[in-house]
Image 1: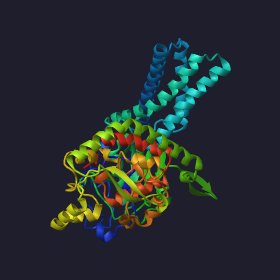
Image 2: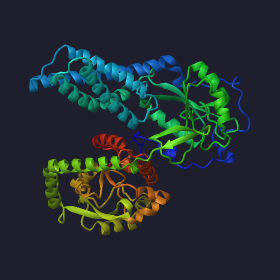
Image 3: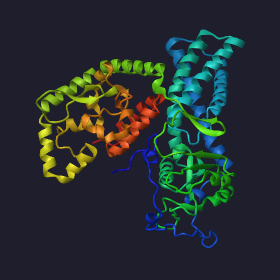
Image 4: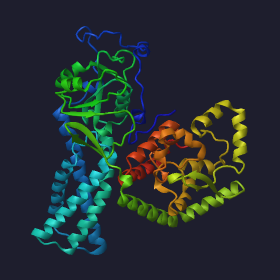
Length: 526
C-alpha cells in the first residue's frame, strides 16, 4: 500500500487498540528487558529535531509571527485589490482613509484571531482553523464598518468596498494560510517542540502523524514512557523513526534543557500509564494535550467542562441541529443545480465518447444504501464493459491474488472490466460520478458524505453501520481526500465514522477544498 496523504486525522490513532503484552514486545530490537537504562551510562544520540533551530519562547514567536505576517499581507492585498477593481469597474470612490481602515481591520483581526487560537496556531485542526479564519475576518471587517458608522462617516463606496472586500478576503485568507504553513514547515525554526508521553501504539501513531504533518505546528522530538513499559526504542536501536527518550521521569529535564512547551499524552496500549505520574513530571510543560481514548469519539467540536471537580468532555452533535441540516440541504441543491447547467456540455461529450468506444447505455445505475437504510440508484457514467460481472468472475477464478484483493477491498488496482482509455480517464479523475448531481437534486445524495455502499458491504461496517445510516451519502468525502483507493476498507470505515461523529458545514467546506487537490494530484486514483 502506498503512502497516504496527510488528511484531517490519523486513522491509526483512533483504531481500537489492544495492549501489547510484555512477552510479545521483548522479542523486538531494543525491547524492555526489565531494567531501566542508566541515562549516564551511555550517551544516546540526539535526534535532529533537538539539534536544529531555536527553542522555547523563540520558536513560539517565530511560529506566531510568521503566520501573522502572512495573514497581514493577504488581508491588505485582498482589500487593496477589491478597492482597485471596484474603482475601475464601477467607478466607486477610494481615498486615503481606506488605507487606515484596512489597518483597523488588521488590528481587529489580530485581536480576535488571537482569542480564537489562530496565533501561534499550534496543533489546530485545519477544519477548525478554516472556521476561525473566516469568522475572524468577517467579524473584523464588520466591526470596522460599524465603528465608522457610529463614530465617523460611512460612505456608500466604503460600505460596498468593505463588504465585498471582507467576503473576498475571507475566501482567500484560508488558502494563503494553508500555503504558508506548508512552506514554513520546510524550515527547522518553525513549529513548537513536543514530547509524546506514552510509547504504545497510539503514541507511535501520533508521533508518525505529526512527523508527516509538520504544517500543524508541532515538532515531536520523541516518546517517553514508564520504565515498566514494554516499549523501549533508542536512537541507535535500528528504528530511528521512533526515538525513545526514556522514562517519564526525564520529562522535566528534557523540557528545561530544550525549552519544550508541548506534551501529548497518549495512554492507549500503555498498561501502567498513570495520569498522576504524568502530571507530576510534566510541570515544566506549558501545554499538555491529553488523548483520553484510542476509540472513536467526537473530537472536532468537543470542549472540556468541569463536572463535580472532574474533567468532562462536552460533545456537540451538529447532526441534530435543524438549522445546520437546512443549510447543508440548501448548499447541496444550489451547487448541484448550477453545476449541472455548467457541466452539461462536458457530460454530453463523455456520453458520445463512451457510446463510440463501447456499445450500450452511457449511464449506469447501481442500487446503494442511503440515509436510514433507504435504497436508491446511484448514477454514474459507464466506465466498464456491459458484461462486467462475467469478465470479473472469469478473472477472479483465474487469479487467486486478484480474488483476495477483491474480497478485502472490493476494488482492483488493475480492473479488467474498465473500458480502455475513456474508462480509465473518467475513473482516475472521478468525472464518472458527475451524474450523481442528479441524485443530489433528488435528495438521495449530498455533495459531501460517506461513499454510498451496497448491501453486501454492511457486514464490513460492523458496529459502525448505524453511524453510516445517520447521514446522506456523498459524491466526495473524507475517504476520498485521505488516500482513496490506497486505504484499506477498515480505514475507510473509520474515516466515514469520524465524519459522521464530527460533521459540520465547516468540515464539508474543508473536504470540498481538499477534493480539488486530490483530483489535481490524482491521489489514490486508479
